[in-house]
Amino acid sequence: MRKKDIVIAGYAETKIDFKTGRSAYDLAGEALSQLIERTGISLEDIDGLSVTTALSEASNPFFAVYMTEALGITPNWLNYGGIGGCSATGGVARAMSAIRDGMCKVAVVMSADAPSTDWRSNYGAYRPEFQDPPGVQGPPATFGLLMSRYVHQYGLNPQALGKIAVTQRAHALHNENAYAKFQKPLTMDDYMQSRVISDPLRVLDSVMFCDGANAFLVTTAEHAKTLGIDKVVYPVAYSEVTNFNGREPLADITQSGFTKIGPEVLKKAGMAPKDVRMFQPYDDFTIAVMMKFEAFGFCERGQGSAFTMDTDLSHTGSLPLNTGGGQISAGQPGLASGGLNLAEAVRQMFGEGGARQVKDPRNALVTGIGVIPYGRNWGVSSAMILEA
Amino acid sequence: MSQTNPTPPAPVARPVPRIGNYVDSKPFWDGIAAGKLVLQYCTEAKRFQHYPKPVSGYTGRRTLVWRETSGKGVIYACTVVRIPGPGLEGRLPLCVATVELDEGVRIIANVLNCSPEQMAIGKRVKLAWDQLTPEQRYPAFELV
Image (cartoon, rainbow over all chains, first blue to last red; front, side, top):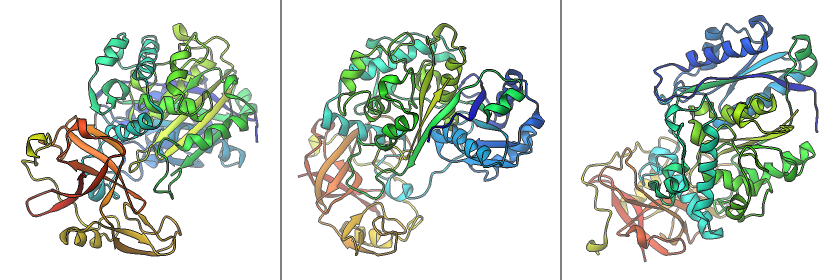
């Protein structure tokens, strides 16, 4: 049911950088400091904390508890978010439930990770016996498999994926937090000539692990006023699904969790695809963005290429796409990545988009993706709709 | 066929995984030793599942046995890994496929003796053997 009682009352984001030599705690400290300065709250106001599992800290089962010490927060509600790139939107949604349930009043949703400095994760499970031997160790191989199937079923215009990459890069040029190496223009020729790393996936379809952090302040609309905060956005709808089609070994892998939750989240918000003012989708690979155009109903299934080519996706266009450059052109701060797309949505809706500001930023659709499972698409799908 | 093989045998030994790290997978490895592809099968749903799991994905219970498959199937999805990574030394470009076995279950595997140009969805494949080390083989496929 649609409610407008809880708000995101502030956001913070560090610069994205490669091999910073810093820890997730230190990056989180920078994000918290920025959040306090922007919102004017004091440390004692914060009684809830959601911490996103970090690749750089995954070997510490008490990362979230250590984080409370690092940040000087004494929460009555502590959530440790282990759904990868869905942990930011999912953390906000869980914080909303906790606030509605009286467990806390002001929650910080913190995502910080530094995998390019220190990778301390081991996915384990079935992978060493059944996935690593054929050489499917990284996400590119799985996404190559996924793309091949998409091409087989629907056909794919490589220039459509190129347009996504080029459009997002143009946006990143206006994003002072984007990784400096990506702060140069990209042409369609650059894209088409970029190296194929796992057929038909190109290097410019893909993200690169970096370091960074982001944070969000979640409280009731009423309490935000008491705290003197006037810039807020309302998360009016959220949907999430994990292990979609997980019981069906012959599932069509071009159907993702968004096939289910896309229409569902729009319905919860009382919106149709045409009502979406801007789209800030989780973009680990360009094909995921295109598959989401279809899953949310921006176009028919299999029509992603044509829709991409026919739609102005720039910040001045009809459907502004990842207006901060997305992860592909701003850099992927490990598992803090889910907050990157969310931070850009909140920034735009606060009217702080600068040279890339979307006009009339009345709402935004944000998504998350978590985990690349065995021979499918992705493990967790999340979608959140924000309204002014 | 060797002149058309762009994926030469690995010059270095690849890691041999610890068996049964996730669930008891001994029948899978015993099957390999016997030259068979043996996968988990749910006796209630009468369907296979792969990779092996602690319960049947169909019933949520341990209604599971291990059963030999035909080793025959069709390429459902395919890619060619072209960038280096752990265990990939000397193996690039590496043909990888999601093979849909005739028994109705999918398995990720290498397609041996196959050039990247020959890889295509819909092509029939049959069981073949890759070598992790001279002593340890691992199931793969080749074009029929």
